[in-house]
Image (cartoon, rainbow, N blue to C red):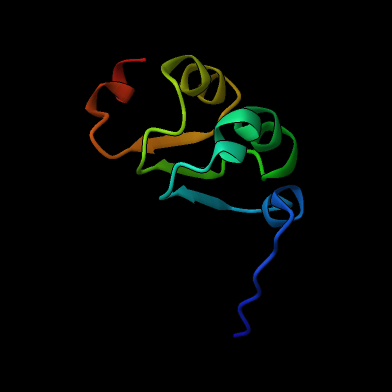
Length: 79
């Protein structure tokens, strides 16, 4: 299967079933919640491996039916 690289974060997220944050780019932190809510599939899996998402953003995403996991964030299940 072909793998493509997309420079535009909005286009990269469009219709995604999973998103994994593994680096802490400023663009991700500033735009992540709005773009995640509008571009990826509902019930998508979001993995935050670098603390890009705040607890407040995680709470909102979970309320909107997204599955959110984080490295070093065992407390997510309690949010």
